[in-house]
Length: 463
Image 1 (spheres, rainbow, N blue to C red):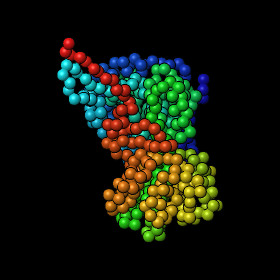
Image 2: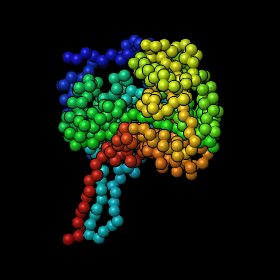
Image 3: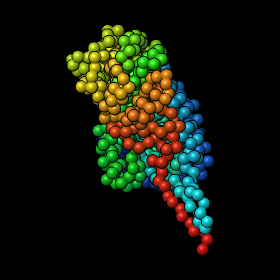
Image 4: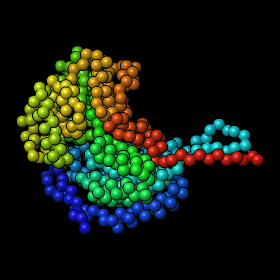
């Protein structure tokens, strides 16, 4: 029998939770139960599914305070901010429930005498969701609720750092009256997680995580010709034009860079600013960053918590030091943040100028509280730099001119283009990445397409 998994909290380094990993028998039983349950669940009406999923959301939100505090202990986000994840969870879940009818209604081409023709979206079967730790509820709900609304069964493997989140999903679904077996979770080793993808009883994989693991998931799923949705990394850019509302841009971009200690797939990781406002932007961003308070995330005065673990913080420290060694200038004195300590997850935020695309900090995902800022002379230069990346999740343009923002956005290779906002998912818009940021789509009516298969009915009614 494998060793149990011990969840070490980044707050104080202690074991916060311990759970046994599923063995081969438990995995086999879960897959069989999902298969049997889905055969009945697919016949439930859309109204029945919506009623149960609505009760699921109600049950989850009723425990918002407990869930939020528990999340802080698991991954370190300040306790004043984790309630926002519960609110976002509710917004997305209710939106996906509301959009199901439009997404799943039969598609009927123009009438043709003597024939009835339509396309129906049918469930795939069992959807295997591999969730992430940085936004364990927000990310996971994007796949779980629409999969179940579409008539699928779901097996969730939540990231080990936030494994208690899987149990919260199960608890709420049980209280909502979801039939047994339609939703299940498994705590799995890496080898067993891969084995589940290979199992013929799994029909689709929704994975959120690193690019390297995403390639592996894609290869394994491809061997069986089953679909997979991949939400991977990001190196999201912000471009501040000379006509931007500078104070609005500074406040929102700094928040987009450092919220959740920079551990957001769509967080701001590189900033390009028109030369005419570069100095003012940099000064304002540095001033705002110095006002952050790094410390224990259970303290209500803390605005910046620890990274998920010490190795993650050390990676950002090395990347930052390498950039400084190549000529970058650090604007934030770590001494302003006494909690910052090498060998711990606690890391001060940092802004770098004098950076270039020869530096890893402007090319490779940091996933931490560091951001580089470069001056640009034109929209063309900004677009070229924004596109000089293997990633493409979101890009934000800060300007007073929506026509120019749309024109620039059309040229940027990205899944989402923002104007005067960033680091946000609208549940009525498709969430999609290009290049190494992923494959497939969640949210909106389009998100349902990847969790169903089209089936055409061509009926001759007149002989």
